[in-house]
Amino acid sequence: MKEIDNSIKNNRYSTRTEFIRDAIRRMLTDFEKEAAIKKLAEMKGHLKGKAKYDDEELVGEIAVRNLAKKMGVKLD
Image 1 (cartoon, helix red, strand yellow):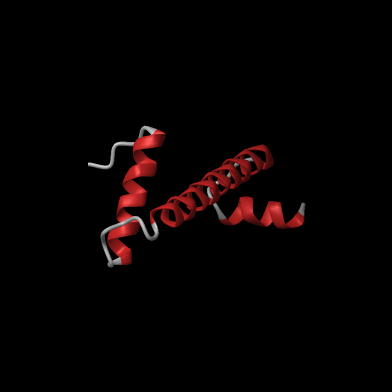
Image 2: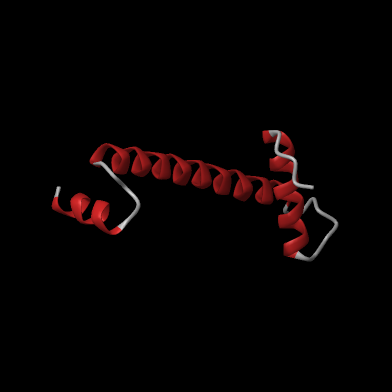
């Protein structure tokens, strides 16, 4: 509790509840990022050997665009 109270004093939080809610939101965001990274790694693995490109960055970009398309995210 002491650490939470110190964070409240030193940051933008006005209550413990607000601090805890934000911490949960951040954890959920981290979990979403981890899941997206795992998906990208899987997609990159599927493209390996099938891609006509030797440049790994280009293969990674293709994987990102495919994942974004699957997730309904518009990149441009």
